[in-house]
Length: 406
Picture 1 (tube, helix red, strand yellow):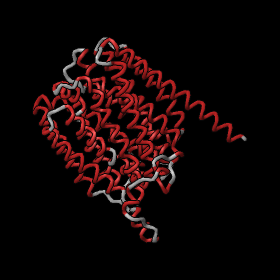
Picture 2 (cartoon, helix red, strand yellow):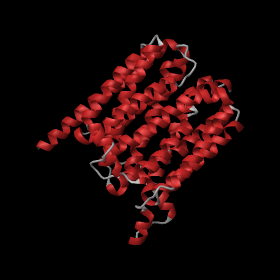
Picture 3 (cartoon, helix red, strand yellow):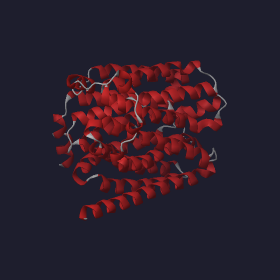
């Protein structure tokens, strides 16, 4: 009944632009996640095996650097302008990958690609916060998160088959074409709340440079500190999984290095159909306690995997954990963010996401270090990070209750 009421009746009231934005984001996310399963092998062939962690690390570092700019532009120019810029640059980068055949050149492109992907999600989530009222954002972010997760996991599942059929250059071309499709879909999305037009009508519009260059006090939104910290921890898990799973899959004899993510995807989707609604009913902290606990269990199962069956089972548990945590964190951030500076609030959360992924990639380099015997150590580190997240939620929740009583 809850599923039917929440997703087959209430979502009918969502505007057309919400669904078009979700579809555009799905295609865009898939366009650059197609590349990840093959990037470890690709940079190894270029002679950069020791730089595997930088494939994801540089990408996320650049995306984190882009977030304050994207948040500023989203708040002062246009949500769609931010998304257009990110998608167009991403398309260009995808098509020029085959022209850079050195490790340094490839890593430069990864940095630029990451910078471009730091724009689209910020504008998209800020626009959803405009479209969907408070009280239903958990449900909406859950649905939107499903489209992003499908794009991520489907891209990773399809990357290896596309490469086997069309070669690595064919993979780059498909990535670029998907970016173009995403751009065309975005054109039909309506943006009624355009910050630059509202400011112009009030006579308060700033010069263009001041609307795109963030000041120091605009880089970080302190009101969203709690979801930001938990986002960092869950994103670190993503970084560890994204970098290590292709190698772990090969170690277990799996030819499709994206199969883990395909199994993971199915359970992320199933979980998110209810997780967003549960946020609206029970709040962020209760959902995150469960999600982080399952993250710990999933990490232990993955790290101790000696068979494909256990490995894929761990993907199921991790998928449920991610399906619970992600919509809660997105909606919690949207609810806590200053209504006047939603872009800044979402950008702060995304900075934590990118830095968390980068930290996960770096931990993979430091702990795993291309030694299959150290997979266990890597996922023990992840389990400890999840435990720290639970402790943080408990302590800050207790302080909040104490302040309410005083």
